[in-house]
Length: 156
Image: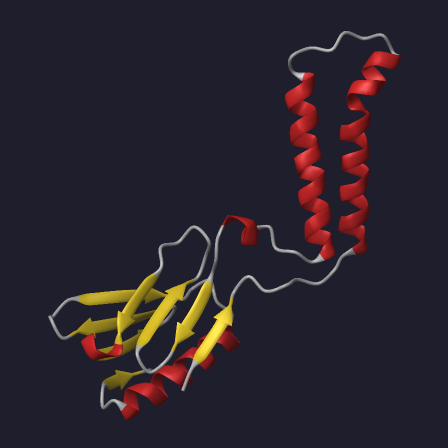
């Protein structure tokens, strides 16, 4: 049995966000030419301001188009198979993984799995950022694999 989920899935398109993003991009692009037309001096502040405004407009447009900006930074995923459990619920979180051979027991507490290892240490797999349906899917997969491997499990 294998469970794999990309947590940075493609989002719904938003025409409003795309339009606002384009509006911000147009403002950023015309910032310097407007200063030149009005014969206003261009200060050192104008260039970084234009660049940041342009990046903001691009990010709004990309988000409106359905792309996750987090995907540019890193990954967020859940992978569970017969050999290992791997969880990384946010691009800024550290990936946590454990081999099924090292697991003694698994307890589920709200928003986390507490994995007791054979060497008497514990590993906490936090899943608070996940949706209810995803948590139920994970619980079912872990239950099935744990039962096959004869690992004690408490999912109350």
